Length: 474
Image (cartoon, rainbow, N blue to C red; front, side):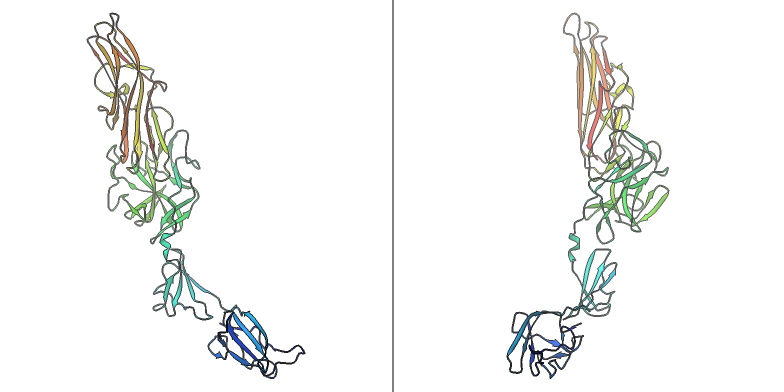
């Protein structure tokens, strides 16, 4: 739509106030001598001459509407003498309003629109689901209108990885003490407060505040679950997926297909590969395939609906919350508080014959190496001159209480004089384990042996004498 030049009924007069009767107005493109069209109607459909003669009142005889373009306007008297030149002259089209329509998904084939033309602004359409702006480039009804995406490269928009961290303690990403038998897990902002969620077309980075996952009795004991975030009617929500098909030590498996927590990688992010039932507390959700972003995994305690993460030294240590993103160093420290005990049989067994002298390591993806070490002080006593040697062995049992993996430590004493000998030493076993999915039980192993006599092997407990440790990330 055009506008008047610059207001209706303008009169051109000389310095004495006399109209420039018979004079003229000439219209050119700005900074040029190229004639530029003017019109006699606001719709800019009826063209006028680019040179208009002024009537006896010093006015054009027709209405003059300019396009929304800059002009050069020249006023001449009846003798064709140039009186003045104005450049640029503009008549902004305040009546032109951008029509913007809003919807979900592409407008092609479903939304009518008008293409832009001289002085007419086009119709725009905002796809709020995929954050794409379209402009109509061919006028028509819904079936024929052509829409062109202005930011067609929306797939190249930056989508950040999940920036939060799963933790058993609210607002505390990195805990420094034990968290035992927690009945809730929190996804709290850590390196940022954005998390990508797939909307059916693309991943969208979404802001979040701390989210809570409530654990209940339906979260079965000694079972592995994955933790997801999804959009529940535009509300970010945490949920566990179905239980892993196998939660056993060294045999962990999610399973595949319907009813499982199978993962797949979509645009680089892990999501649920199949439709699933999610759970948060007593509420369950039907979640379509690909619509939930995987954040990490949980290992439920021996009591349903609880999860534990240990930081302190002790027996039966475990770490039950594992993060897929923003991984941090994790460690477990295990040891027996019994002051000392003896064992002179050359057969590996759990330290002090207690299966609780172990720790359980855990990761939701087979991507992290384990550094496992056992240090323990020991006293090997020959006892009498008839003993040739007394030895102590230390080993690390990877899902075994009878066989050691990695470096086996052997220390001891030998009969070096008529009075016999004895020796204190420190057994040091180590095992570097390749990434392994799910849980794995690491056990401190020991054995003792004598030859030719009645020597003794004494193993010492307490944090200053014994430590089985595991270091990895999650």
